[in-house]
Amino acid sequence: MRWNRAAARYLLVLAVVLTGCVASNAREAGNGGGGRGPLTLATAGDLTGYLGPLLEGWNRTHPGERVTLVELPDSTDETHAQMTTDLRGGDSSRFDVLNIDVNWTSEFAAAGWIRPLPRSRFPLRSFLPPVVDTATYDGRLYAVPYVTNAGLLLYRKDILAKEGVPPPRTWAELERDAKTIAPKYGLDGYAGQLFPYEGLTVNVAEAVYSAGGSILGADGDRVTVNSAAARAGIDFLARGVREGWIPKAALTYQEEESKQAFQDGRLLFLRNWPYAYAVASAAGSKVAGKIGAVRLPGPHGPGTSVLGGSNLAVNTHTRHPDSAARLIAYLTSEPVQRQVLTRGALPPVRAALYDDPDLVKRFPYLPTLRTAVVTASPRPKSPHYDQVSLVVQAVVHDVLTGHETSGSAVRRLARELAAVSRR
Image (cartoon, rainbow, N blue to C red; front, side, top):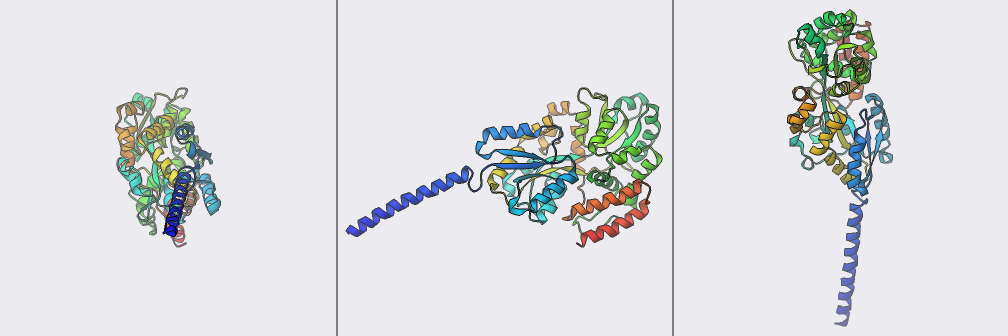
């Protein structure tokens, strides 16, 4: 009996000690051990300087989960190169949360660099429908949409009003106005982003899609670019450069260079993302108050924009996956998404914001943008997307510079993209 009492006392003490250890471990998990703790967020260069203040709001209320912002180059291609180099380091990776181009989700997921996420943790039903698909791979959610985008046609509404013509809805109307109206005002006609980088792939895809063509099949394995529609899309751009209503300077334009040309009053029409509208409308711009925006034109009416934007993903090797998921939920919440638009001039993924009267008054292009996003198509979805894009850039740049015809280009694209798919 005496032994039983002693044993009971011993077991009670042991239980108390073990309970204390479990509680201590739980506290550690909530304050930096296990799933929670400080994070790094890697993103391409923040052109409007909005992201730092958003993260300050998080850091004030989450002192044990502070986020350090790592800004990579403005160039999409350079950001991709730096992220992939770092992620190949595995456990030594310095990035916890990645703000990735929507077209990298498949590649990063297939490589095992980002972890699948539970759909129930994020308000996906509140997002614009097409954007969620950009965050999936093989039927699973590997990222959460953060910013969406669709190309728009910006135009000088003051000049078109003087001429008594509406903004163009078709390629023929765009070409006519670029040839006849722009020279009367000492302007170049039309430009997009035709330098050989990711932006050229986007411009080509929009032209091909608008003509009714495609580059790869929906599964990403089947090459579909060798078609009359794809030839027509590529030839639309090549003809513009050849005939001069697309200035040769556009062959050196990325987003910023083309935006600056329009903002400086050198272009009648510009294909760009909506941020260019916001920046070119700001005080001090030569074209402030003189800008309109419509959907991109196509052969017979409004064309098809490429679905752009970025998704937030979690590094497979992060030490703090719960904090990473909590940060993503914060950045995609409605109050923060509102600031993404008002501070960053970036299109939010929350559908309700596109109907907000105050926001529409401040950003008149929102209804047009919503339609452009809902009708947009993604770039070719492939785990080898970086190679797909490089092939498109190289081949179409040869067409734009007069070294290849659009007919031979689609045949070459078909061969080289098939080789990429077999890798």
